[in-house]
Amino acid sequence: MYIKIALITNSVSGLLGFRKDLINVLNDKGAVVLGYAPDISKNDITNLTKFGVKPIKYLLNRSSINPFFEFISIISLIKLIKKEKPHIVFCFQIKPAIYGSIAAILCRTEKIYVMIEGLGYLFTENNLKTKIIRGITIALFKILLTRVKKVFFLNQDDRKEFIKNRIIKPDKSIVLGGIGVDLDEWKCINKKESNISFIFIGRLLKAKGIMEFLRAAEIIKSRYPSTKFIVLGDVDSNPGSIKKEDILLYVKKGIIEWPGFVDVKPWLSKNSVFVLPSYYREGIPRSTQEAMAMGCPVITTNSIGCRDTVINGLNGYLVPPKNEVALAAAMEKFILHPEIIEPMGRESRLLAEKKFDVKKINKIIMKEIGLG
Image (cartoon, rainbow, N blue to C red):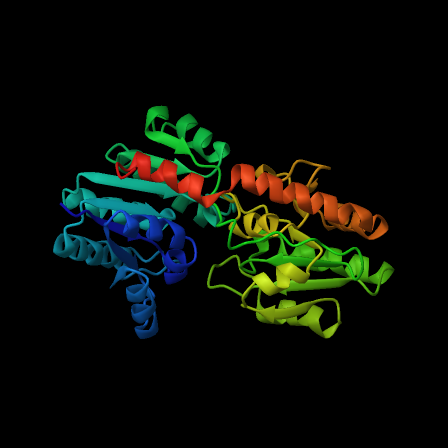
């Protein structure tokens, strides 16, 4: 009998970007893959179908807290799951995890799995509105996750928090250590010591440390004018995003280059050092895993998720979050000692091979969902 598996995410990029390798493995096993996302366009339908995914569009607003719209989102998922009757429902990210689990439970789906890919903005900010939403989210998880087969985490800190708050029992959870990257696709490239550049890749959220990166770049530029700083990524609908004019100010000053949302591989191949000064409650940042696979030394923060990617002094440096002075000091080490760039980059690649090989990680997932 063929197996139908529903992958429920909050964006098409969540399917084609982060799930590509898992989808390939599922297709190889003969599974019918249903891809649920709220932003599927006509072009996406073509791409997903070619990729072996049946695209299913559902209603979801990632930043909405309107109770009426949230109710409609759940109803849309219930109808679509009831229509397709998947044998397995696998939900990713916070909102899809909650709404997908509710819908799957009400549709009496027997096998439900959830992946927590970091706790993000909701567990980073501490204003009154966020605290209320966080409390509701925790309460819902306590109810729903008792009904799922397994909860996958990317780091130990998130798992420990869920266990400490009695959201899940230890035997229902597993830590993957990252989504992983295809090491054959993200090939290691030796870094040159001349024309040193620092690159930031990600959504331009304050909690991702973009402002600290920009301010540190300004400090370094005042001392070493030839140093290059590159930002890849775009502003976001997330309430924590910076505004377009914020980053354009640094472009106009000549401090950074900002190509926007582009293919990152060519930029990483030319770049010296990858920088992610995040305090976002990451899972394990995918961008960092890709940079490590390509042989980039890493500067990141000693915060949840990020610290799992760096052995301080071996493949890069850990700095305190929200501290552009410490970040600039770490950058300056590479400028003053460019000979450390290549060996640290090699260590990044070795760590990626050990911890972030997507083939190894997908084997674990497939075994846990009963398709291994």
